[in-house]
Amino acid sequence: MTRSMDKIVALCKRRGFIFQNSEIYGGQNGFWDYGPLGTELKRNVRDVWYHDMVSAHNELLQPAGAPATFQMVGLESALIMHPQVWKCSGHYDLFHDMMVDCTETRKRYRVDHVKGHWVKCNGKTVKLNKASSEADASAAEEADRVFVTTTEANAIEHVKEKALKLFELRAKDAERLQIEEQVLGLAAISAADRGKIFAPDASRAGTLTDPREFNLMMKTILGALGTQEDAAFLRPETAQGIFVNFKNVCDSTRVKLPFGICQVGKSFRNEITPRNFTFRSREFEQMEIEFFCHPSQSREWYTYWRDRRYNWYLNLGIAKDRIILRDHHQDELAHYSVGTADIEYAFPFLDAGEYGELEGIAHRGDFDLRSHMEGKLTKNAAGELEVEKLADGTPKYRGSGKDLSYFDDQTRERFIPHVIEPSAGADRGTLAFLCEAYHEDHQPDEKGEMQERVVMKFHPRLAPVKAAVFPLIKKEGMPEKAAEIYGELKAAGLSVNYDQQAAIGRRYRRQDEIGTPFCITVDGDTATDKCVTIRDRDSLVQERIPVDRIVDEVLSRLKA
Ligand code: GAP
Image (tube, rainbow, N blue to C red; front, side, top):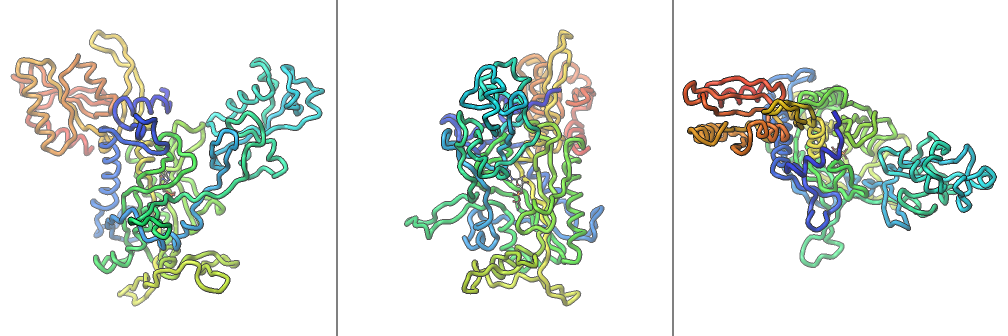
C-alpha cells in the first residue's frame, strides 16, 4: 500500500475534503478551505475532542491514571486581544523565527528548514568556475567545497541532482560525487563559509542573507484612523484568552482546583514557509487545554495529560508504529516551559523515521498567570523568573496588576497555580487522520474482475458520512423505501448519503473512497422479508437486518 502525499492531496480535492484557498485566483499561500466532506471531518475532530475532554467529563469520578477528580469547562475568547496581552506573554518580543532571504530567487526560508550538504567530487574539492565534464583532479585541487542547501524531504537525491549541474557532470558521473553525511543547519555555518552556500533554487553561490528575526504575529489595524497606535494582533494561540479570563472563570463558576479550561478556535501565524499541505498554515485551528493545579502536584498532572492525550489518538485509530511521544531537550523548550513533550506523527511527506508535531504538552509553571499579574517575566542569571526591567528599573511591559492567585478555602492557602497545557492542532489532527485512513486494496467487481479500491478507514466517530442508503434498482418501490430509511437516519442526527446512480459495486466504491463505515441496500426481498443489507466498509461483511431496527443498529455500530 502506497500512502503517498500526492495521492492523499488529490483525493482531498477530488472528493471535496480540502481545497487551496482562493484557487481561482491562483491560491493564497498558507491558507486552506475545507469542502463539504472536510468540513464534516474537521467538525468531528473538534467535536470528539470537546466531547472527550469537556462534555463527557465526569468531575465526580477520577479518570484512570489521574491523581484526583477534577473539573473541565469551556471558553470562547476573541481573536483579537489587548496588545498588552502579547507583550506580557512574551509573544511580542520572543515569538519569532530566524529566516534568510535569497537575493537571486527572492525566496525566503526558515533557517531550520534549510538542510545543507557539503559536496565534493572524486574525493577532492572541485573548482567551480573551471568545472569540466570530467571535473578532473588537477582542477579540483585549487578549489573549495560548496554547500548545497535544500528544503526537499528527499534531500540527498535533490542535492545529487543539483551537484551534477553544479559540477557540470553527466548523470553517469553521479557515483563519483561525494556528499558528506553531515547535515548542517544554516545557523551552524561560519561567516567565512557563507559565500560558498548555494541556496535551494539559486544558480550561484553566496546569495543568502545573514539569518535575521521575523515576528510571526499577524498585525491588523483597528478603527477608522488606522494609525500605528491602533495596531493589534490576531492571536497566535488560543491559550492567552484562557489565562486572561482565569479570574473571570474562577469567580463566575466557582470551580475548584485542579480544573481545566478548554478552548477551540482559530489562530494566526505569519509562517515564513507554509508548506506540506495544511501541516504548516498561516490560519489554523487549535484545541487547547490549560489545566490549573497546585504547584506541588504539577509533575503528576503533567504525566497524566501526556499519557492521556497520546492515548486519545490511539483510540481514534492512529497506528502505534506511526505515533510517538517525544520529550523535548532542555534547549528546545519554549521560553516559559520547564518541561514539554510532543505527540508526533509519521506524516507521509516526511522521510522514513521522521515525525511531525501533532500536539505539545507543556508544563508552563506559573509563567503566564504571573506575567499577566506582574509584567513580562524573564530568567535571571540564577535561572529564576523575574519581571524584565528597563535600564531605569521600571518593568519593560507592565502586567494587569490584578490578583490572579487562587485561594484554597479548605487549606486556607493562597498561591499562583501551575499550568499543564495540552495544545493540539485541529488541522494537523485532521491531516493525520486523513493520512492514517488512506488505504488501497483490490476487490472483485460485479463481473468478478479485480478492481483497485481506495478506502478511507476513518474511525466511525470521525467519518464525515456515517452511512449511505441505496435502492438496488430504481423501481419496485425500492427508492421510496430507501428514502424513508435515509430520512429516519437523518432524523437520528446522522450524516447520511443517498445514492441510486450506477451499479451497486460502483456505489460501494464511491462510499469507500470517502470512508463511509456502513452502506445499507434496499433490494428485491425487502418488501417481503422487511430486511435490508448492511455492509461493513472494513470487513466487507454483509448482514440482513430488519428495517425497523436499522437506526439502532447503525447507532450501536458507531458506538462500538
Ligand atoms: N499554546 C501553545 C502553542 O500554541 P504550539 O506548539 O506553537 O503551542 C500547538 O502550537 C499546536 O498548534 C501544534 O502542535 C500544532 O498542532 C498546531 N500548530 C501550530 N502552528 C501551526 C501551523 N502553522 N499550522 C497548523 N497547525 C499549527
